[in-house]
Image (tube, rainbow, N blue to C red; front, side, top):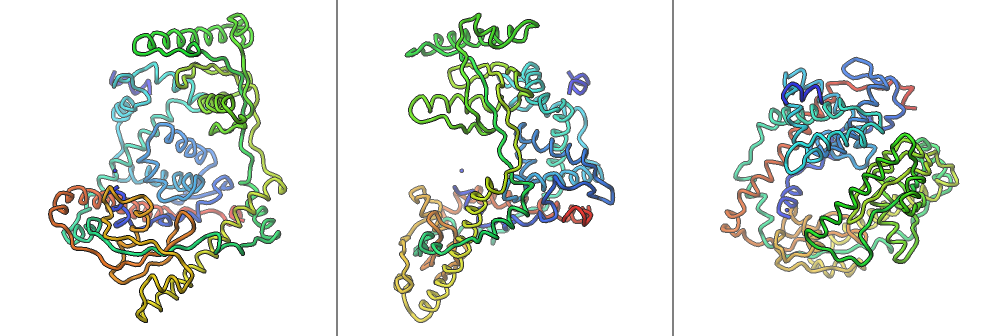
Length: 506
């Protein structure tokens, strides 16, 4: 980065998305991407990918997240359903992105990379690039992970690559008047009935055999680990108890606290300094937390004191997980109206779970899967029964009652109206793909599932449509662009011929 700088010192959109996005959760062939940590001899474009190269891409994923490059993450992780799938998809798609950018001659220049880094909010003060913040980020965020400034440059280079390629790939996107009119269903009032399926009643018979738990453990043992936990000792620099400072008085008081905390850090980092000694000399009480995980979750206890400790832990946890070794001391951490300096006192790295430790959570997960399968099977059977009753002339309410199900009336509701509740909107969404007189398949719901029967869709208000035309158009365009990019990336990934030796796949 320094070398580069030297060269040149809202609801409508959601519903539109539901109308137009083709579900591409499985657009990426994630099956071939599972078990990244077990891959040792992968090939892409006919060339071997070393473990070191894969590790670099994993680091890129972590840093991309830290730098807030969410467009890059979203476009390369696709519709991944969990963190592991997202990481795997990102790694291979990033290699494809880099290859295609070179092939199409859209590589960003060093100056473009440097200029983009300067615009990152994490490195700015009052809207201007702040070299001090950049240096602090290098020291506190990168160095403990073994990163260098070159990783920042590479992430921003990849972010620019995805922007440049997106403009090329997404250029053909267009929206026709017919598509606009179809999407305008979101402005038409609907009258419908939601039929509810109770998960508890439907899934009471869900069971998981002991052998299923054992088999799951054996298949997934390498990914079943405890969470890494840490504990810290800390000193706090806080406003006087009961203080109600406002305006300049509070700003001045906070500045004094920040200065005192900075002086404390300087003394600890002095050649003869140590955390306890400096704290004792300054008459600062040293407190210690119990173990907490990366998210800041800890067994802090109940009551006001427990909440206070939990809040402190939540504030210092991100920094604590950047400290390399026990005995390492942080820089100043601001959390609310207080400043903290922490010393890492305990580090319990993640380790493989034993079968006895993993069994309860495996059983819970398998029970949830079995229960969901039972719910869907029973719900779909009752939907078939209700469709037959409706075809014979029965009203949806009577058909639902015959099946022992409760209903919710949805009378003359416009999907985008602000008066529509979140619960009603959830029931309304499936009607956008229905014709009058149709009953949907089972849909996931807050208490299990539901199906919705569309009785009628009212006429379109042309005035309302013209008022929202621009918004709907932009929503449709954005979704088409995203789909075009996803399809292009999938074809490019197929052409890359990512392969794994059979021995690596078990």
